[in-house]
Image (tube, rainbow, N blue to C red; front, top):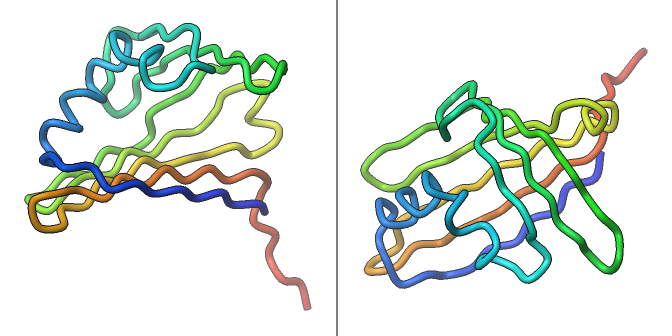
Length: 122
């Protein structure tokens, strides 16, 4: 399994970042110049909802349907877990967005994993 992780410090509150995420259809293209399209397929950004996004990274197009599998929130931050649907599900692509309060700022972490955990046999 390959895991990519990147974090950034943002001077704001976890709630403001969460509200931004809940409206990702309005913010997706401003997040990155690679991002071109975002649609809430099932109407929202809640557990079980499906979204569709398109992005072009280094000339390669990625068009994905993604299911939001878990949302956890508490006073110190939040976590959204997601998994790609077919055909990317065949590659075991999953990810998380995590926000943790640190003083008057937040640490925003994006995690992407590719592949499946293989049990040790023996």
